[in-house]
Structures are given as structure tokens and as C-alpha cells.
Amino acid sequence: MKRVFSGVQPTGNLHLGNYLGAIRHFVRLQTAFECLYCVVDLHAITVAQDPATLRNNIREVTAAFLAAGIDPEAHIIFNQSQVAAHAELAWIFNCVARLGWLNRMTQFKEKAGKHRENASIGLYAYPVLMAADILAYKATHVPVGDDQKQHLELCRDIAQKFNNDFGQPVFPIVEPLILGAATRVMSLRDGRRKMSKSDPSDYSRINLNDDADSIALKIRKARTDPAPVPEPGLSAETLFETRPEALNLLTIYAALDDSTVEEVQRAHGGQPFSAFKAALTELAVARLAPIGAEMRRLVADPGHVDDVLRDGAERARALAAPVMREVMDVVGLLRP
Image (cartoon, rainbow, N blue to C red):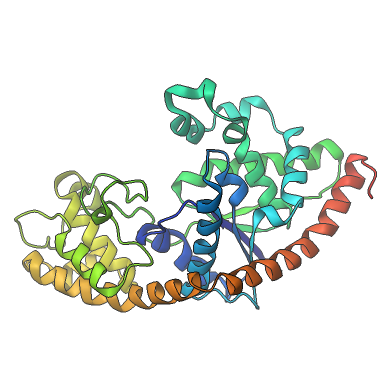
């Protein structure tokens, strides 16, 4: 059985970029894979968190999974901290991975910035925990964006070194799933910057829990330029350099419509952006407003969300248990 593992950090304000780049693909993978979708709360605490906010964010991500259409009975939705195998296997992998490998991780350098000496060990080592997340279930495939490719390579290196060190093929060499367009949705206020939950302007993003009126207002206020919608002919690279906000709206439309940017240009090229924004609003409201409404309903019922997580964690523990028994036997640790 081909098995997918993927996770989302509970950092609040899930937005259109999270949906188009990850969650929508999670839903589609259900037809071809056995899927485990994890709210990776242990990753979240690599930086300071307010405990009450963290708990709310865990439930919000879970609500987004459910509202988008992930089936918690056919597949597994759970939060990482409820399954001890993640932390246990991460420690064993800490003894397999090499400092040189982690020193090459560009995301740590970006996140720690000029304050590397004050960064937590967890932030430095979290790619090892990510490998444990995946391999605790012997997942065969992981959907990844451009920013996670390096971490998946590390996961593959750890699996291969573990297998070589102990002379047994315990772990699969995980394959990446590179899925779909619009994996990088840009800000509605600045087409050169990635859409971000940390942007101080709420008008820079469409939140997954926005209602129809909010979606419409944000698209109407989205930055464009005075020229009409570009017609086919220019490459995406050229459009990004010359008309990034126009390209961003075309990309969002194409992703929501399951079409290509060129197809959108053929249909709407030459129109004023006021007309194109009206079409984009209609499409975005149709696709996203029902998800937002269901998210709001689920967040208002935390008991149900917690039940989903509890059931998912129990099933995840059952899958991870034989893997951990095998790992401990191979390493030479005494099992309880």
C-alpha cells in the first residue's frame, strides 16, 4: 500500500496559499493513497507559543482539513504530540544524522537570521523530527513544495544511512510528490512577496475562514496595474518581472479553476481588471466560502474536533508501534 504523510504547522491564520499549495492536494490524494495528515504541533514549539493560542490553532488546522474534504474515517487526521513515536524516533535519528547535513539546511539560516546563537536546538534539529514524522509510519510518498525539498532529501539520507548502519532495509526511501500549480501564492498587496499569515495587513491574504463578503472585498482591493489583463505570449518569468500583481491574480484564478494561466489569459486577456476581478470573485466565493463556513462551524464545536484528533492519534499509534518495535530491536534497545 502506498502511504502518504504530510503535516501542517498550527500557526494560525490559514490562508489561500496554504489551501492551494497543500490542503487541496491532500484532499485529492485520498483516492490513490492511504493518507496520514498531521497537525505538527511539536514543530510549532520550536519558537515561542502562547499555550491557549496554540491549542486553538491546532483545532483550527484540524477544522480546515475536515472542511476542505479530508475524510477522517477513511484516512487519519491527528496531532503530532499525541503520538510519542515521533519524539522517540527523532532522538534515534539525531544519533544517525550528521551535523554537516543540518548545517546545510537553508531554512534554519533563514528563520534564525542574525540571531542563530539564540535559536533553539529544536529549530536547528526540526528537519530530523520531520524525518521521524514520515518514517515512523514507513510512508512511501510525501507531497512537498519547493521550500521542503531539501528537508525531504535529508529524510532520504537518514533512512539510507540507518539502513546501511544496521545492515537492514528498515525504512523506505521516500518519494516526493510535486503537485500542481499555484504552490506559491503571492500577497494581494505585493505580487513579489509570498502570501503570509504574518503580514500585518489582513488585505494581503484571503484567510480560509473568511466569509463571502470578506473574500469579495479583498479581491476588489487587490493591487493590480493600469494595463488590461495580459494576453497570451509573455512567459511567467517575464510577467513576474514586469507585472507581478497581474500574474498573481491570473495564477490564483487558474488554480481555483483547475486550468492554466495561459487558458485564463485566452479567456480574459485584454479585459479591464475590474471585469476580471468580478469573475475571480465569483469563482473564489464559490470555491472557498463553503470551506470557511464549515471551518467556523467546526471551530465552534471543539469537542468534535478533539474527538477526531483523539481517534486519529489512536490509529496512528497503532501504525507506528510495530515500526518502533522493529527499530528498537535493530538498534539493540530493550523494548518494554
